[in-house]
Amino acid sequence: MHGAEAMSHITIVGGGISGLVTAYRLAPDHEVTLVEADARLGGCLHSTTLDETVPVGLDTGAEASLYRRRETKDLAAELGLDVEFPSTAHSSRVLSNGSLHAIPKRTVMGVPGDAAEVRDLLGDAASDRVAREVIAGPIDAHDVSLGDFLADRLGGDLVDTLIDPLLGGVYAGRCRDLSLASTVPALLPAAVAGTSVLELVQSLLAARDAQSAALAEGESPQPVFMSLVGGINRLVPALEKRIRDHGGAIHTDTHVTSVQVDNGRWTVATAESSLRSDALVLATPAHVTKDLIAEAAPASASMLASVPYASTALVPALVDIGDRELEGSGFLVPPTEKSFIKASTFVSNKWPWMRERIPEGTALIRMSIGRYGDGPGGWQDCDDEQLVARAFEDWQRIVDRGSDRLIAAEAHRWECALPQYLPGHGEKVARIDEEIAGISGLELAGSAYFGVGIPACIDRAETVAARITSTRA
Image 1 (cartoon, rainbow, N blue to C red):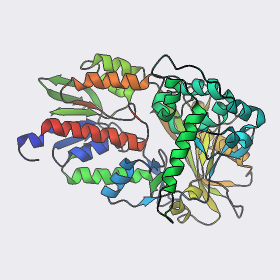
Image 2: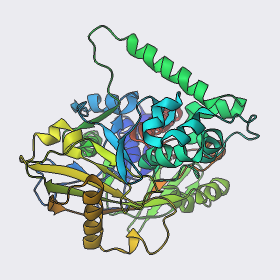
Image 3: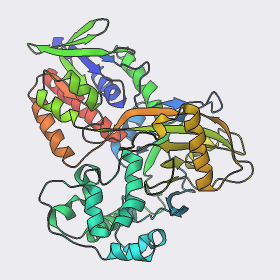
Image 4: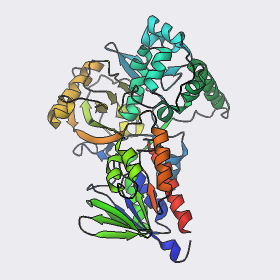
């Protein structure tokens, strides 16, 4: 692009993955300024070295990205970052009735095509209930609670024991609160048409099998997840460098107090100064965005105010395991179990690059705490030392490893970090986008809209950047 129009000034508020990707896509052709309220960039992508005990660092927020979607792997390739894949030697488990069980493999987000797949986990009575699917008529709306729909169809045991912890690992939410259409849209046709969920899952699994069979002989199946040496957080400094290389300005510790539009030009006020720009991208959480657009887009602000968020905590730890090998890649904990932690990842088992970088006789683990709807008097009342101690005590009990000892550990808190996609979320976002489309120069990005995962955030950021570029060409 050339000429005056090509150098429009774009302000981007929010320095998480969404804001960074938007700025990266726009910086070559526009004058870009990115402002971030925190002292660091990256949002939910962050890392620690556990006080230099893990020199390469490990993720304390998101720790992987879907590889089967193009967005993250394409971006990593563009940035010159080498992709790493999880070990195939280890698998994850789920806690049920106080014991760890293998997670059934042939499911769609925990929903099997054949009840026999979940019999070892659920037992005879609950798996027989799955087999006796109760097929109701079509839903009388465009969306429904995922957990309630599946509990009615296949029984509460499947939902509470398997589906809830699987969804909880993504959203830190409870599947009876979450939207079917926004979280597992592959199952929506059965709800809309009033047809069998089990038969739909059978067809989805058959399609997956056919795709695998189509691979060239000797070719390995495509990995589901990916990361980078040092963690998926390494996207952040790579994006920052590219933005700066293209002349983009980045300001951290900069709080935006208001945004205003006048004759198509935007003014972004901060505590220290104000920025004038031709277009504005708000890549901020819904509870921040709502206040900034209250004047320019009151209907959207009201809808964003109704998007709830979950707070969570993460305890990464280096553990002395002696000569007793740690099995598996981690475990999930349903909310029906009496447990302080909701999940754990055995990082050094899951990621070979990490195993190579820590001493023999040690393991790196992550322990996750907190779900949407947690009441007072729980983990949020613990100080960091208590949080670490209670998490590790729980971990030792679940995996029966009372002799393991902490070498180093930290508590990382994520306040109001994960949006909850309640039933009707997709329709709400469509109405928000419709209003915003009528406001010249304003765009919204982030995890509050069409996906909390890294690929979904990248996709929306790239879409937003492309729209801005097309209108400024």
